Amino acid sequence: MKFKTILWDFDGVILDSMQVRDFGFREIFKDFKPLEVDKLVDYHRYNGGLSRYVKIRYFFEHIIGRETTEEEILDYANRFSVIMRESLIDQKNLIKDSVSFIEKNYSNYKFHIVSGSDQEELRFLCKELNLSAYFLSIEGSPTAKNKLVKDIISKHNYEKQSTCLIGDSINDFEAADNNDISFYGYNNQSLKEVSPNYISTFSQDAVKLN
Image 1: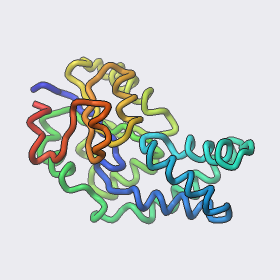
Image 2: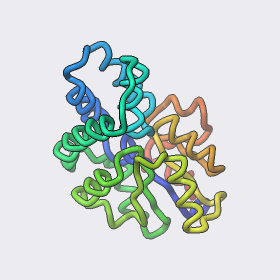
Image 3: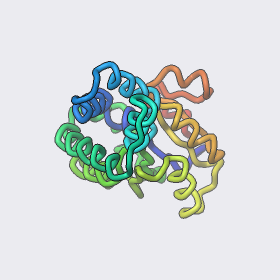
């Protein structure tokens, strides 16, 4: 096979969670001006691969223009996580196209999840959604995705030429590019502008990974 190891982003690739996460940010910041929260949601959508910790800090320091603390960021992140744990465990949120490929091929590749989502929340969701058994590891924030990718390759001594990352955001592309591995865009047509590799559907394009 062309690739032996596939690193998967989670949100937008395995789980259709964008609207739920939009709601989560609006809910935790409901006491702020709607236009300010709109700017955060726009930032969140464009930077899907970044962690909530980065996005919450960005909201305070760049959108409303005031300093924040690690304690405040953690408090808002915990509020966000409570909403996510309650709202994202529904099987209907799974993206059937990618999950079907994962279920059929997890024994043919070495699969890992590298996500901007909170790691403990991510592992909770994977367990509740019966996904955990398909992945050798499930890694998330607050560690940056760039470092998650680097650490997995180093820990398992993976060959970079036979490793790829599948993601739906520019941050995913950057994490792959910074670690000298191939990137495949999915579920975001704009990624065709930064990478020649794109999977429209796994049912049609899985051959590109072979």
